[in-house]
Every structure is written in C-alpha cells, then in structure tokens.
Amino acid sequence: MARKKAHAVVLKVNCDDGDLNSLVKRLPKTYKYKHKDKIGLPENDFINETYTYTWEKNFTTRSIAVEDGDTLTFLMATARIEFQRKVKVRDGVILPRDERINVNQPDVILFMADNVAYMAVITSYLPDVERVAKLVGEDEIEAISQDDQLTDSFFVWVYYHFQKKLNILPSLNLNNITGFTGIVSDPTNTIIGNSDNTADLIITKAFVSNKNPLKSLKLDLLDGVMATLMVLSENREVTIDVKATDFLLSEGYSEEEKILNAIAYVYINLLPKLLIKYESESTNFQDQNRSFSKEIGLDVIESIVRLNDISMGDLLQKLSLHESQMHSEAKIAK
Image (cartoon, rainbow, N blue to C red; front, top):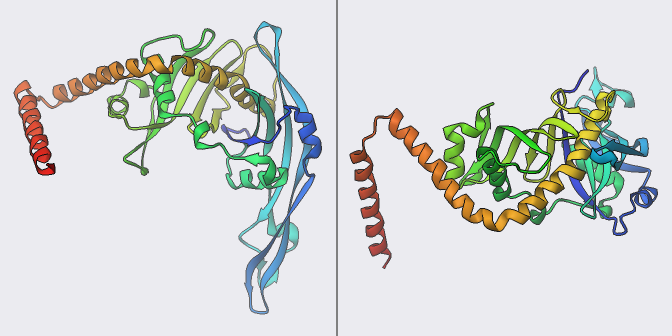
C-alpha cells in the first residue's frame, strides 16, 4: 500500500573520524531483548520472550544527483524489529511464537552534515527509534540536545521571509507555509494550524506577534533538485508528503527510494544551508523581528477592530484602564 507520509527521527552518532563505513563495520549485527510478558493463564501467568532486533538489509551506499553535476551520498539499511502483540493466548492456549510477535522494518540512514554523523530512523511508530538505537548500540547514539534544536527564532525567520517575499536561499522557492504548531504558556497548551492560507491567517499573525513559540512549520518548497511538502519540527524531525515530493534531476525512483532520498536531501543539504543562512542573519533579524511583530500585530488589531465595530474611543478607554491598573500594581509592589 502506498504511503502518504514518511516521518524521520534523527539522532547523533559517534563517528569522530567521519568514516561512516568504518562505523558500520563496528555496529552489532543483532540485539536480544528479553522480557517477561504477562499472559494471565491460571497455570502460567507469564511467559519469557526474547525479541530480536537485527538488520533485514545491511548498509549500502546511496547517492542523490544534485545541481552542477554533484552527488550527495549516504548509507541506508533496513532494520527488523520484533516486539510483543497484545494477544498471546487464544482459547486458553499460548499462541505459536510467530503469532505472539509483531515485526516492524524501519529504514535507517546514516549521513554526515556539517562534519557531524547522524542517523535517521524512518518510522511513524516512535518505539522503533529506541529499539533501533539499542541495535546500533546506545553508547554510539546521542539524542538531539536542546542546543541542537531548531529555535522559535529560526521558525519566525522562515515565516518572515515568506511574508516579506524575500529569497531565503538563492535556489530555493518557499512556495507556501501551510501549517504550524506552537505552544501557549506551557507545552500542555498546543495550537495546531493547517490551511493553505496559514501564513496570512489572523490567528497565525496573532500567535507570532504575541511571542508564543513556534515548534514546527509545514513548508511547500521547490529548489533545483526537489519539490516537496514537509513538516520541520524543533527536534529536527522531518515528515514529508510522499505524493507531493518529486525529484527534478532524476526520474524513475521507487516510492522507497523517493522517501529515503528526500529525507536524506533535507538533512544533508537543505537544512544545513538554511541554518547557515539563519546564523548569518540572526543578529540583524532581532531588529527586523521587532518591527515585523509590530507590523503583523497591527494587522491583528485592525482585523479585530473592523470585525467587531470597535471605535477609537473604545480602544483608548481600554488602554487607559490597562495603564491605570499597571500603575496600581507598581505602587502595591513598592
């Protein structure tokens, strides 16, 4: 069955010399996870299970054709992950082992970006990530730290470029922003927006101008290599819309090849370039962002005033009351 979306979770890998082939040679071939599973039979309440994590397909080198005749390379493998099914007993009889276990086969890619080695696990079932990490060796793996996460300022910078119709990268067209997630006050209050008009919606402008942190953006992108619709999250997770993804320099990719290449291209080429550009502009963007927040904040106020028939007198009265309240609170604090 054709996949609609492909989701990747990225982890750092210990590879100080940058030699991914050498890294692959030292990776374990198998990991055994032993667990006592509850089955609830009167004569046998538990069963000892051993779940095997191994490589269904060993790592091979893949390449992506990019502009100017260059290629990007990465390593790809497929893991085989066994895990328990909920039903282990039928009619009072323990089921055969192949009926007691589930098997997932997440694809795994290894790549270098900015002289750092990464592993991306492509799966929509998040427990696969931890299990692949055990297979690779937890001593070899490091989660994306808070310092490595994409910041709210980065996402606002992308949004700013789209709203201002600025060229974010020389060869990249940011066609649209069709969704976002963010939080209000604390992580339990999450706002999700999905619309072809997300960038221009008053709710989006109100969210950004009020300094609520963005946690992800859904981007419609086109450059000289790939067109895609993807979600980029703060922890560098990537979700691509498979049907909306095409490569311009190569044809005939299978669905699996298209998914692997698209995710690899984002991590190896597109995201690093965006981050380099953001870092080069981040100082100036602090001033630009203050002006931008004020501009879209005024758009929000104008819309609310117009839709609710609010007069200038109403606004002045409200502002006067707010100012008086602030003065009273300041006196009490003294």
